[in-house]
Length: 362
Image 1 (tube, rainbow, N blue to C red):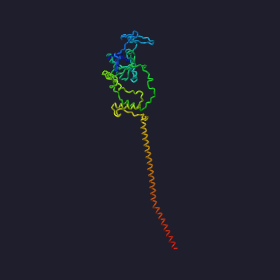
Image 2 (spheres, rainbow, N blue to C red):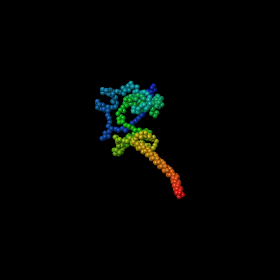
Image 3 (cartoon, helix red, strand yellow):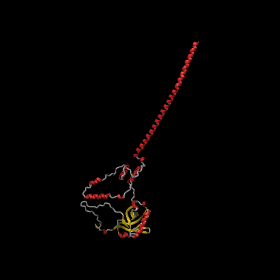
Image 4 (cartoon, rainbow, N blue to C red):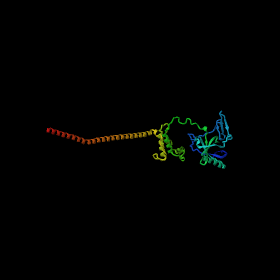
C-alpha cells in the first residue's frame, strides 16, 4: 500500500519511524456528469478569473485570504518550514481508557507501518504496551495541510491511527432532540429490550452495500434494453411519514418478525423474554385484572352461598331435632296421661258404687 505520510511516533524518549497508509477505501457509487442530449462528459475546468483562461495543474498554488480580502500565496516550502513539532511527528500526549473517547470525534482511519528495520523493536513495544494496558494513546500530528488530534490503538497485530476532530469542531446538540415531552412506559421499554435480544448478535460478514448492487443491476438492465421505470414503481415502498402508529403493536410485530427470521416458531427460542413490569398499568392487562376481580367475586359469592346453605341446613337440622324431641316427649307423655285418666275414672266408679250401696242399706 502506498504511504501518504512519513514521520515518527514520539513515545517519551522513544522514537518510532512510521509510514501512514490508508486503512479504508470507498466503494460508494460514483456518477459522471454527462450531457443528456448526446452523452458527452461534463468536466470542470480551472480557469483564472483575471485572464479567463484554463490554468494547468503545475501553475496552481495555495493562497490564504486574510480578513480584509487580501490573498497571500504560500508555497509547500513555506508550510514545511513551519515551527510545528507535529509536522513530522505523532506526539503522544497521554493514555486514556477507550471508553473516554466519544466515537463522534473520530474522523479517518489509517494503519501505521514501521519504516525500516530499526522500527521493529519500538513498534512492537508500543503495540504490546497498548494491549496490556487496555488503553489508547492520544496525540497530535500535522498531516494533509492541518494539525489533528490522533488516537492510536491496536487493531489485530498493527497500530491503527484515527484522526480526531477538535472539541470545538463538534456542534452543540441544542435543538436536535425532540422538544415535546414524551413519556415512555415500562412495558414499551421491556418490549424494546426483548426486540434487541431477539435480533441477536451482528454477523459483520453478511453486511454489504445493497445500493451499489442495485445500481449495477440497473445498469445491466438498461444496457439490455429493459424498461426499469415500472419495476422501480413496484419496488418503491409507500411512505409512512406523518402516520400515527401504535408503538406497542409495532414493537410486538417487530419481535415476532425477528423471531420468524431466526427460524423460531411461535415465539419460542433462545431469546430471553422479559416479563412486562408495567403490565398492570397497561389497558391490555385491565381485562386480566377484571377477570381476576370477577373470579374473586365469584369465589366470594360461592363462599357466601356455601355459608348460607350451611346455615339453612343447620337450621333445618335443629328444627328437625326439636320436632323429634317434642314428638318423642309427646309419645312418652301419652301413656302416663292415659293411665292417670283411667285411674281417675276407676276411682269415680268405685266411689259411685259405694254410695249406691250405702243408700240401699239405709
